[in-house]
Image (cartoon, rainbow, N blue to C red; front, side, top):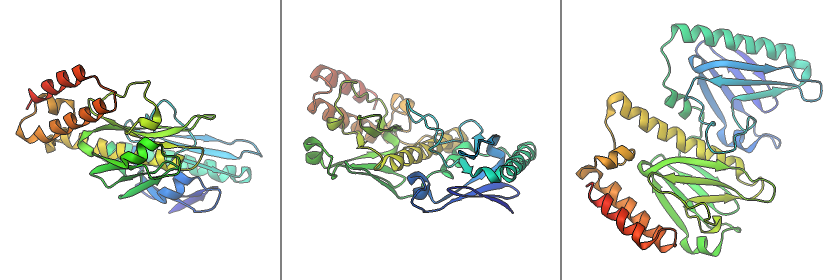
Length: 301
């Protein structure tokens, strides 16, 4: 097994997969330390970008995966090429060794794509995110994901009075459409946001009253929040693929499940009504909007 050591970890090239392990040093990105290690099937590697760089910056190697296999893309409006386990960098004096290793990955991946069975993109995603249960902590509180639900708790120093009073909320995985992430920019707060199916947060909502969001302030918890978003989305993708493969839809597994809701989906419908009730109490939904939507949901049971 060939291997290449970079600034923040080591990549090991096997006959069918690329294994990545990350060190725990002070300068290692928090995302990589929280992740620890991960594995990518070579058949899922579409391309390898390699940049020799210069004496100051050194070389950069970045894997590009087949469509739907990278859980760190599409998380929100902001996307960082540096915050991903699919990037390895190193000192300039090792550029020839690193370039040879990149060529080896490309050749091995090309052979695997031609001869091996196409990997399940959702399974590849789950191999690139945190092991469960996973917790991300920020200055406002913490998010915990156990594979079945996400719990947001606001017990940190920066939590608003409203969120401290609320203490926590839980969101079952079937009710979640996706997780979104935004890093802090200048003096603004970053956040991890749980986006529920059929629930829209008004754009004017202050983050201190947004009970779908865990805020980040500066670097504390920012990368762990990114990893949490990627982890939730990877498990959501697995649930969707399971339906397409004939496993059958689970309760509340998508908007279409509510449209055709039967007895098995009643719990999901009632959960949405409860959530609408919370939004009405917080002034984010009018009484008329609540009544109309409640009647619409009840009619679908």
